[in-house]
Length: 579
Image 1 (cartoon, rainbow, N blue to C red):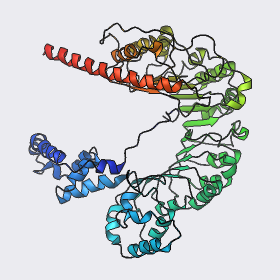
Image 2 (cartoon, one colour; image 1 turned 60 degrees about the vertical axis):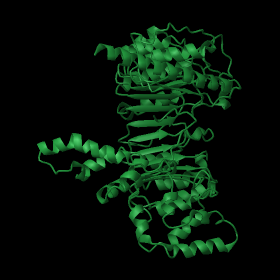
Image 3 (spheres, one colour; image 1 turned 45 degrees about the vertical axis):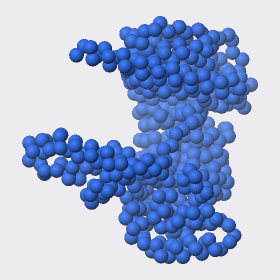
Image 4 (cartoon, rainbow, N blue to C red; image 1 turned 120 degrees about the horizontal axis):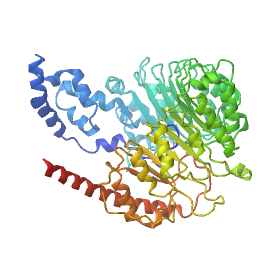
């Protein structure tokens, strides 16, 4: 999803996978698979004796293998080694494995010191490097992630990669040899000068994601340096908290050169007139979204009200800033553009009057019937608190009922949206294919609210009944409700594939951790992940009790896990008795 994401993340490092050791279990498993399954198939169709000798088949199988398994397969035989190493080096989550081919990483520890000895030693080392070996592995890399805060290893004294090391590497490599000649996707995160990225750029790069947290001048230098280096770029994502006003000249210049660009993601408040003019000229752009990793300051000039003539001729996915009233006017002014959209993402920091919100979604329900994804970030910015705001009525859903193909709906608002079983039943009638629904699970509780707010936990039963194929569900639950679990782990209606239950800043209803965990388990065929806390949409004030709420949901997840194991064991026993 392009919109809401929790502020926590998990990253699996290549070094951690490699440290799992080299096991031959997978190799033996493939051999047995070949003997019992593929050999009869090969004999029937008169294929070669060993089906795993077919490169295409081996490539397909090893594409599902873990890094440790690939390392094992690389030492089986020469044909397996080539395929396994290609797959192992295809996606690198760190630049360190590459540099290990040519330099002792511990030499980088003091490279930024004024003492010339370390630099001289590194230069001497690089002058004697076997570049043919480096190129064998570098040519396999298709995707690279770089973060200048990454550690070499968890216990390493090398904290990050000095830009001087990249410069020396480029200086000593033979002329004409590209550093990574087949690199297609590059993800780069830097809090310092981003010039170290330049050696990794080439016309082969089609996807670039950069997170720049350094100074304005460094970011401007970065964009000026990009010009002409990646002419075939198809996807670009920018993550930064720097104001668009400070870098708009360099950014719009480089964007205008990417005529092959199909996907562009920029921070909120970035579509200033000059940048929008460059974006609007892109002939192949199908996706224009906002990335909420960082949120720059509010900028009135980016509240979209008009577009250049004949802008965005192929756009299908549109994310922009504007209040509901201006968004309605925009949709009315450019009916052809909005009529072909499959997804709309509105980020409104002000003017979220409930009447105007209803007018906007009502217009979408009339003129944008083909929508499959609607994302409404109506989280009132702190600088507009004086405006006041009212809870959204259920009519915000009803306005979109004519969009029968809707699959994903996300709404962020300072007040929670409260639903009953009738509301859920009507939603199911209107949107039979809805798989993602997230409605105000993180209200701004610093605002005055009347009485106990939020949904009853019993509404989950209605969602399980009417949306059994729901994949992600987000709701804010009432704190004072005291739920009861009947003890039945096998009710008539269940979620078949619920992956995530987003509870936002809810407390565990009634503080009944055990009952809530077992009740959720009873409604699921597979164990969902309970996701608590605020997302990258939230702009309100943090509350001291939220830490305790998250702890309670973590404990509830343990009861959920235990209940799911009990449920699965019981189901297996019942199925065994029926055979």
